[in-house]
Each structure stands twice: as C-alpha cells, then as structure tokens.
Length: 345
Image (cartoon, rainbow, N blue to C red; front, side, top):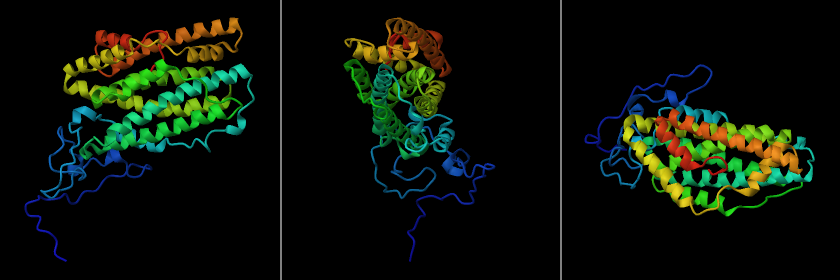
C-alpha cells in the first residue's frame, strides 16, 4: 500500500531512546527528549490533537483550544507531579481500615459528620473546576492535562471517602450553609484558567490543606485520622502545582501579579454580601478541638480554632511569597481571601 507523500510535511524524529530511572521504570519527566521535549511558549497552529513532537498533515483541523500559551498553565515540575500522583493513588474502599471505626459519643459523631459534609461540598468544586478546563488546554501542554486528570480522580475519591465516613458510624450528612455555596460558585464562574487555577490550587486548596491538617490533629478516632492523612497527601500535590504554576507565571512576567490580585479582589467583591464563616463548621471544629459538647470544652476548642485560623493566615502569606509574590501583595491577597474565621476554599 502506497504511503502518502510527506515531502511537504516535514521530518519526524527518529533514534529517540528515553533513559530509564533505576528501579522506577520509564518516567514521564525523563521522556522530555527530542521534539517531544520542546515545550514551546505558544502551541503551534494547525496541529489539532497531534501529540507534541509529531508531524501533522497540513490540513489538520483547528479544534479551537483556548489555552494555547505555556505561561497560562505550565509549571516546570508538572511531569514529576504527575508521576507522584500515579504512585500515590489509593482506594477508599480497601485502604481505609473501616473495621477499626469505634462507636463515638453522639455529639462527637455529629461534629465529624458535619465536617465531612463541609469537606464534600468543597471537593465538588475541586472536581468540577479542573474538569471544566481540561478540554480547553492545547495538547501541546499534555502533561498539564494529564496532571489535572489525576486531580479529578483524587477529588472523586475524596468525595467518596468523606461521604462514606459521614454514613459509616450512625450519623449521616448534615447541614449546608449558603455562604459556603456562594464561595464555591465564585470559583465555578471563573473563565480565565490563570485566575481559576490561582484561586483554586494555591489559595483555595492551600486553605483546604491547612484545614485537613487541623482536622487530622483533632480527629477523635484512627479511621477519621487515616482518611485525613491520605487526602492531605493528595491535596499537597494540587497545592504544589498551584505554587509552581504561579512561580513560573511570575518568572516570565512579574506584572501578572496584578492579575492575581485582581482575581482575589473580584472574588472578595462577589462574596461581600454573604454572611461569612460557616457556623455549623465552626462549632463542629470547636467540639472536636475541645474534646466534647460541654460549654467549657467548646469554648476551649473555639480558642484553639481561632489560633488555627491565625496560623493559617500566616501560612497563606508564606505560600504566596513562596510562589513569587512580594510581601505587600501577598498580605493584600491573604486579607482578601479571609482572616480569622473564614474557611472558604
């Protein structure tokens, strides 16, 4: 059978051989070789869904991808984060020691179930928002799409495991507060990937990561604690991408820090009319942190929660500066995202 005449198409790579990592197989972060390893600042026109490095026929259709610049989505450690994401997958049915879940006092179990309800709400946005953008990313930046696909899988598993914990021990899913829903809607309405990723991966999931560590520390049983340990490991990768992406973005164009500040201001304006922190969550955190529902214990727990929010605020500033923002702008954004009492994504 006669092959098409490819004279006008250009030459393909040949002779490429990816070095193996000792004991780790063929890693994606080692595969950036040949033309596949040339990640351009602008995705080439007329390549459609051709993989990076392949030679596309000249009349390949335009798919209308909207994220076509490296600066908008790339981070230098994306291939490594993808490898980590695959290696750290776990199963919410088999890998959680559900048989070790003890019977808890009713008010303690109710507090756990309320917290799990809040966590599930937040994980829905962490599932849906990356899903919204994956099909907009030009395949030239395939590693970003692959990494976001692992995040979608992570968040699906988190929704599963938090829901199961709420249902597993005589309780059930609890109350949903409108302010939390408005906070999540402010993320879902984002149409700029740069802004959406910044608000979700760095600010939102950064807050969530700190929250998970606090809940892990006050968890009343080993099963709940194990759930928090495993989900926090996943969230750390998502935040890692957020920090690395912003760092790459600002290294290429420092003036884009103004766009990030604008994103935080727009979201704060959107949420200004809401009633603030979720009171169901706050009380549940105080009950667990204080060790019970008695007034004295709740007050002791509430002070511990307030101290946690103060530390979370400082951690947020540190994370923003780690991503390349100067101190003044980092504080402005941290203030806009919420100080002492807000637990928004």
